[in-house]
Amino acid sequence: TRFYSGSLKAAALGTAPFVAYGSSLMACCSKTICNGCAHANTIHQLEENLEESCPFCRHPAPDSDDETKKDLMKRIEVNDPSAMRHMGTCCHQEEDYGGAFEYYTKAAELGDATAHYLLSCMYHAGKGVRRDEKKKVYHLEEAAIGGNPFARNNLALSINTLED
Image (cartoon, rainbow, N blue to C red; front, side):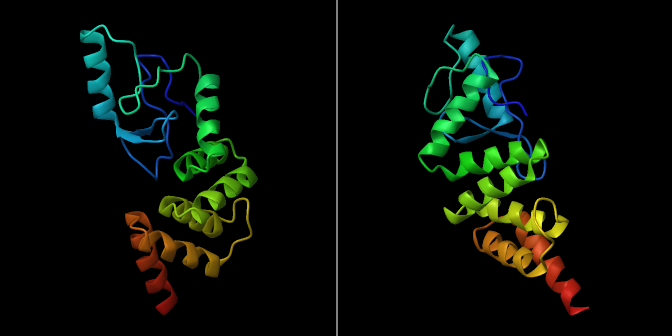
């Protein structure tokens, strides 16, 4: 997983492909930025000879993935659900499904709709948890109520499948 790092060539961090296409999470403040805006910010900083920094909080860009992970852990320590969800995604991508479940659950308890969606995916696939249709639908409903468009779609498909 790539976090936002000091590299101008890699100004965007990797996010789950099914969560946010074309956007990045800034580990310093847990704000999401579209990759086009991140690129525009990088160009502005280059043109003005500014130090590379977060476009939201102006925190200096970390020099390594380790520094970025430290920034993300600071956000997790203050119960930032976006940071928890992102760390869960990192765990999931590394096939640490227990860690992913733990971080997604904490983020969902704090009201993160996307974390609910990701939990529903885990219950559907049975990765890190036992397959459970009721829990899958519960988390899809919570995510849909929270406005997650993927959850709304999957919930409709689940309901149609249950009715058939």
